[in-house]
Every structure is written in structure tokens, then in C-alpha cells.
Figure 1 (spheres, rainbow, N blue to C red):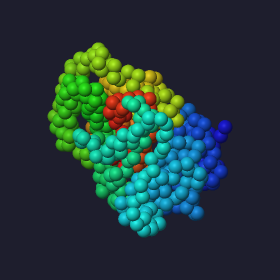
Figure 2 (tube, rainbow, N blue to C red; figure 1 turned 30 degrees about the horizontal axis):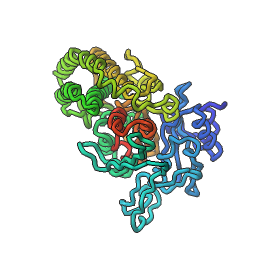
Figure 3 (spheres, rainbow, N blue to C red; figure 1 turned 90 degrees about the horizontal axis):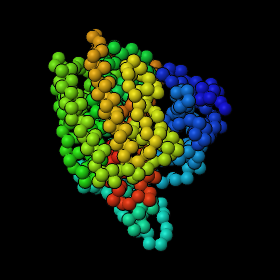
Figure 4 (cartoon, rainbow, N blue to C red; figure 1 turned 30 degrees about the vertical axis):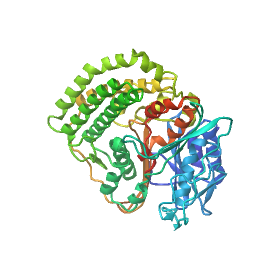
Length: 503
């Protein structure tokens, strides 16, 4: 079996692309790659378009090799990957919505992001007029005696973002769930086109508010890969500190929120207090509760406050004091366990097929964490474990978060102890010729991918892929044969990003 590197060598290698190779291949090589994905030999990391080209980022998990293959589409069509490998389905529908490139053989040709509200079709490709009026969206059929449908959203109670969930149920048991997203598409990739680095990194940091560090981190590393910039050590370590604070705050919030959806509000209250303590420490140390606009291409925009390490350490001490009792409470409350154990089970084979990242994948046996598998600095010199469970249920997704809270506490300790002195950044210079870069950063939700091309100091094309793209379809799968009342628990245990997928 040819390796991923063999496939790249068969194509026309693109120079000035880093840190991983990219090659333009022909249709037969593109189909071969799709076949390897379908057979489980490789994992799909992303699939995106340009006006006359499609790209696919691939991981060979056995060797940790990453590569991008590209196919020119002069006829505005390409062989469908989703026809063989379902994780590509929504990505290919999106490529058609944004660029007008058709995936030949795609079994589902319905629009995904385009709700016929933009006033134009193919906004990032060769634009044409929008359809005169929106046509009804055809949800997939489910037939049988006694089935009924329950429509939820896109407007929800509470503060979650817009998304529609169409349940088909037999009594209380869910037979099929189909999602409809795209209500808040922001056009960030279009806004980035022509932007300078300073503006573009701000846009990246606003893809998903709970992952502003992860996105600005990934975007900046992609720029640095393209320009071959070396980031000063102090900035490298501060970035990891910011990433772990973001992970810690989100995991604490999620643990409480999952319990809240099981009507166990006590855990939610205590976890919210701990999450708030992390946000306040972040504000004290870096001047922003969510740590927005601190990571920039070349380094970081500001240093930690002089009292910041002491404030953060006091916060960690408080979490270490209080969190074990909360774990005990979660583990020994029968009513909670009754709701979370064996609920919303994700089979390990599906986690592997969809290359599910973050706690969703790691709770179902997929041991992938970009911090370890791709070993970027400073994680390559830090001690930490990647917790993995095989059960794949709501309970497992909670426990992965619990263990990752413990790991983040340890990582922050190590970073504060070893934080080097030195400058905060390197100037991202102005280079006229085209350069391309890609980065994959482990956010709290999973791996965030950014690919971009720079030209003359500006963004010519940038694609940002949230881990939710490969997690949302799995949520549809795990709710089948569960009762409708368990959907909030399943949904919260996944906590997929609406904004990250509607970017």
C-alpha cells in the first residue's frame, strides 16, 4: 500500500508550503486517497475549496504524517470523496455552496450553509444571482407505523446559538435525528480575503468565542509556517499557558452544564464558580476574561501581568482544593449515573471513521491529541497524559473532561515554573511572493485546522476548520434508540460549536 508521502511524490509538489507538503494530483490519485480514507487507512482532516481547486488535508495516524492533496477543477467538478467516505459529505456540500464546485457522485446534493438568504450564489467563486425564492429544505425520510416528528429550533430557550433539530420518534424513542445548521454563517473566510495579518488574526479569534485562543493560535502558527518565522521562547510558552487556561475554563463549565441537563444543578453551580475563578484570573493576568487578541503572528501582543503567575497559582490551588469533592459527588450520585451511563453511546469505529477529535473521540477510544501526536512546542517538552476511554457514552465524555482538567492544572504548573525570559515576538515581515502554511492546534473541543495562502503581506485565501464538523454528524448517530429526553444530555456532552461550523 502506498504511503501518504508516496501519494504526494506522485503529484506536482507545491513549493513554499509548510510545514507539511502539498501536491496537486490528478483525478485518479484523488480517488485513490478517497478510497484509503474509506478503508480507514488514513483520516480526513479537512476538505475545502477555491474558485477552481479543491484541497484535502489527510493524516496517516500510523506515522503521524500530514499532507494536503489538491485537484484542479477546470470543469467546476471533482470526484466526490463523500460518496465513499461520509465524513466528507457536509464539507463537499459547503464547497458547492461557497464556490459552485460540484462533487460528482455525492449522494446528498442539498445545500448546507446556503439558506438562499445571501442574495447571491457561490459567494467565494464565480457569483451568480440567487434563486428568486427559498425552496423548502427536504429532510431525510423515516417511515413506519406510529412515527411522529418533533421539530426543535432554530430558536432555542436559553442562550445557545441557532440550530434546527428534526427528530423522528416512535413514542419516546428517537428513530432518526437530522440537524439543519448554517443559520449564523458569518462569511469569515470571505472577510479574510485581502486582509492584513493584524485584521485577519482578529477575525480568526472571533470564529468561536469559547475557542478564541485556539483559533488565533492556529492562525498565527499557519502564518509563521508560511513565512518560516521563529517565535521567541517566552511567547511560545505564554501561548501554551493561554491555551490551557481556555481549556480549563471550558471543561469546568461543560462538566457542570452536562449535570445541569440531568437536573443536577448543584454540580453546575459549583463548577460555574470554579470556571468564573479561571476567567477572573485570566482577566487579571492578561487583561481579558476570554484571552482574546493576545496571540498574534510572530508571538503574543502582551506579557503576563507581574502579579499574574501568583494570581493563576492561587486559582489552581483553589481548584485543587474543591474539584476532588465535585468529582466524588458526580461519581457517587446515583441519579446522575442513571442518566449518563450507557446514554448516547458512540461506537469506537465511528469515532475512528470520522477522525473525531477532542473529548468526543477520546471517550470512544480514539487516542488523538494534536499536542502529543503532532508534538508542537512547548508541549513536546512538557509532561502530560492523554486520557482515553472506550465506553463512548455521556459518562465517558464527562470523565475525559475531568481527567483533562487535572492534566491542564499540571501543565499550567510546569509552564509557570519554566516560563523563560525574553522578547514577546518576531516581526511578521512583508514578502511579495505567495507562501502557504497550515497549522493544527488542540483546542478544548478538539483539533482546529487553519490553512492559508499569503501574498504581498495579505491573506489571499484562508480556510478554518472547527472540530465540530466531524462531531455534529456523530451526535445524530448517538441519539438513535435513546429517548427524546436524553437529547439535551447527549448534546451538551458533545458541546459542538454552531459558530465554528457556521463560520
